Image 1 (cartoon, rainbow, N blue to C red):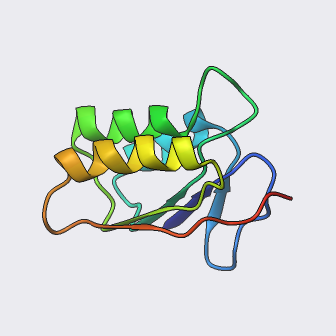
Image 2 (cartoon, one colour; image 1 turned 135 degrees about the vertical axis):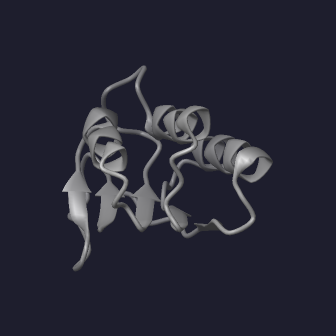
Image 3 (cartoon, rainbow, N blue to C red; image 1 turned 60 degrees about the vertical axis):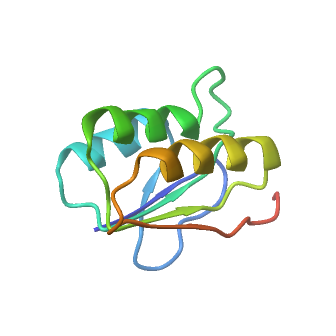
Length: 101
């Protein structure tokens, strides 16, 4: 399954939509997420996409591919830094920011 975490943008075809970090974590807990696309700002401060990344790292639940689509440069770098430091070599991480709505 592919999961798109974003509080405002519509999900792309082929992705299940998670509007909150908690929803994204619930999908991750199934162990069936292949691709995870992350936004940083979720409109639920202080909870952000970084909290999902922390959950992934702390619980060693890595999708095969993680895309950081956040338009927030600080958030992108924060999520990317933690992932690159801890991810297994087999996990592909990329950054592809989407414009604000």
